[in-house]
Image (cartoon, rainbow, N blue to C red; front, side):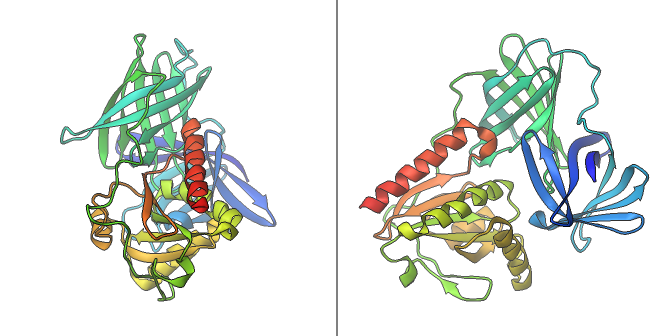
Length: 379
């Protein structure tokens, strides 16, 4: 029980710190990952005499620790122990990054136009959002495909470090702010590094998310028939969806931004279903093997209190999405939200999802989403 500081040994020379706490609620001990203002539920804690296990069902992972006094030593591994485990050591501490106490040279809060550069030279335009209080720094990066969720770290002088972990894969960003309003840095992980540069801009914004994914010429709707976890085929042509506004979400239980979308959509549907709206979640999972798909989709349903239909649409691959939904001219991101009007035609397609970590961008999305639904219900 209590607060812990953990370090994931991603590879030689790269250790990524993160924080979690173990609390007891309703007679059960649960682990919660802490990132900035978010407390993200990891899973139930099971303890033996000298070991501790936490099944991180959201990502089909688990933490397995040996208990030695006030230290936990173990691994992050796939449930079933497939793949290579990640070494993790945790201690009873409440900070994240080791610091020297050197004060920040300025307040670097604000929004930035940021460009990430891939190994093949391709550039990706993003938006960096930072909030600084003393030496503490929080923030996120908005990409066309979704945001980096809640990042937390420190600034010493003009050097910054940020990290995040909710049970999938730890993320680590480091870099430096310059007096002229620019920044540079890199994101580091098990798969290598990716450099980025940026410049401060109060009006930094991404391309219009409603103009990135669209239908091919001649198409007005999507035609599909996918099974749910019990084998029942579901289609937009079913009576359940006739003369209703239907929201299609292209999603996956493995996807952190899809987690944020489900956190929004599930309670929204409960509050609005009687107005004449329906939702279908098109799941693209790491495997379509029936037992696996049922396991991860049922966990997703239970965790977020989902009451709308979920179907097994394919494996988690953008090309698979394009092949299974041939009317789409392009597919860029999990999640993608498609709104169908009462006549059965596509009214709007939104690429990616700006979650709670993005602040005003999240608020703008919710307003635009509700305005669109309200307008279609009146027609």
